Image (tube, rainbow, N blue to C red):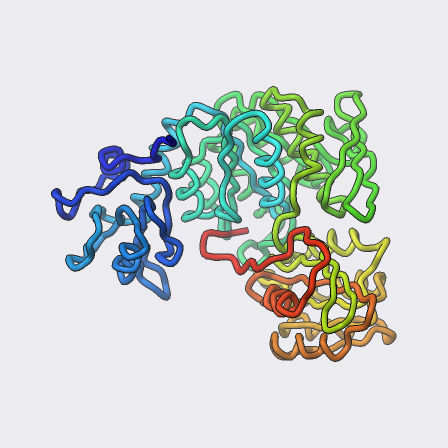
Length: 480
């Protein structure tokens, strides 16, 4: 029988709360939820107060769903459920995360970066399961809500934990890494994914480097040597007390050096050199950016003292994360097509990487929703995409969002371009244009809705095989 994450007494001590009704104690806690619709038996429902909704309004719903208890500021005397009163449910959740981390005796890996965080987290967690009990953040649970949830659900007997960390402002990762206290810290890459919140890439690099503030003494920093900020990040890590720095990337002096990523129908074969030893392994993903991040993952494996060869072989069975480049073949409105689903999110760097991954078999139709959070660089960054799209020569580009609309003039005359006013129009445009044999690429920022187009396609899609396309509309536990 699996031990509970929290007993009632441990929960009270960990969050610093008190039972609303001492005679109504909560049962063992096996999970934590902030959405009452997802609650199930054994869960602790945390009644967070948001901009649009107040979790306290859903205490009864959580009880009806079988939750074992609720973390509240204002108890509901009519709800038939154990309620633990705290000064602030979010602060109490953070205290639970801190308590859980302190009783965890395994190794913690923290991951941040402007792009590639979630994919790297998923690959590392997949590889680590071959070596011991592994816990990792769900989806993109990487912000001030998601990180405490992940830590608070970390079982004490786990061997490994992988925590993704994101941010929208300076100081946010410092707070997250203080909770997670990683033994190993990986930064995938610095890029302009946060332009709406920062004045420069240098400021973004400094904010990402905050992860080293929580690095345990003598810990390991893993850095992308191809990143222009490599030297700056390495210096910050060293000053923070890192005992070792491992580099990965394409440069010859990288310790984990990417030699080639040869793409094929089922993914790619990666050829790398690690400490003078050549290594080849398979991946289901497409694109050099995936191969580079895989080497960052293998560097984490090495830092943990685990066999890199075995972990690399394990990556062959790692599925493509939802909405991040999965390819799906089948029939859509009586036409045989291939859907490339990269609809989870977008930034200038991830757009460029996705485009580069498709040069061998370029898409015939591209459905692109605008990139968000770019600030003053919005127009420039969208305009810069057009030359890359011209290089792929699609038959049709369907654009969503004013920023993407405004950039369409940069496309070659041979490329048909449609500025769709909304998702429904984009789907209709696609239905009118789709032909047998089309390769359809879908990508955009989470908030600009390309995933809605993807979902509409899948609703009328007869799949031959699936490599990761499914609904992914995110939540409030994610940051960049």
